Image (cartoon, rainbow, N blue to C red; front, top):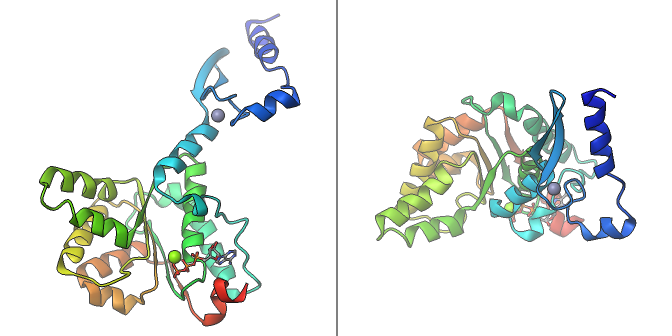
Length: 248
Ligand SMILES: Nc1ncnc2c1ncn2[C@@H]1O[C@H](COP(=O)(O)OP(=O)(O)OP(=O)(O)O)[C@@H](O)[C@H]1O
Ligand SMILES: [Mg+2]
Ligand SMILES: [Zn+2]
C-alpha cells in the first residue's frame, strides 16, 4: 500500500457514516462541529477551516436580522413578472461575476423604487450568496446606523471606529437608503462612508425607495458616486402590482 493509499484508508476509517442519531446531533455534519475538515494536500492530511461553519459565522456577524437570514434566490418568486425576472437575473449575475469585478470602479448594485417589491429580499439574497462563498458582508440599515453614529459624535475615537466599520467593510449593504428626515450630519456621515468606499473601490449593495434624481438632490457628491459605482446594475422596480405585501 502506498503512502497515499494509507492516508486515504486512514481518512475513510475516521469518516465512517454517522448513525442517524449522530447526524441529528450535529449543527454542521460536514465538520461535526469541530470547525475543521481534513483535506489531502500533496499526499498528506491537512486541516482546513470548515467553509460551511465559516459561512454561518459570517451570517451571524453580518448584522442581517434573523427574519432576512432565510431570504435567498430560491424563495424569491418572480411571479412571471418581467421586472422581477430581470431584477433576480441581475442579482444572480452580480454574485456570479463578483470576484471578477470586486476591485473595479463598477462593482456595486442598486435596487430602487416600489415599496414591498422585494428590494431587501434580493439584497439579502445577494449577501447570503456571497457569504456562502466565504465573502464577508456588513449589513447597515441606513436610518438606524446613521442615528447610532450621530450619538457617538461626542467621542471621536468611538465615532471613527463606528464609521470605519461601515466604510471599510469588504462588502456593505445599505438598506433603505435615505429613509426618514435628512439632516446635515446625515449627509456628512454618508459622505464619509461612501467617499471612502468610492476611493478604495469597495462594493456596495443598495436598496432604496428613492428615485435617482432624489438621490442626487440629497447630495450630488454622494448620489453621483453611488450611481457611478452601480452603473450597469441599477434596477428600478415600478408599479403597485409589485408590492408583495398586497398581492402575494
Ligand atoms: N418576489 C418575492 N418572492 C417572495 N417573497 C417576496 C417577494 N417580494 C417580496 N417578498 C417578501 O415580502 C416581504 C417584503 O419584501 P421586501 O422587504 O424585500 O420589500 P422592499 O422592496 O424592501 O420593501 P420596502 O420598500 O418596504 O423596504 C419580505 O418578507 C419578502 O421576503
Ligand atoms: Mg426594504
Ligand atoms: Zn462545519
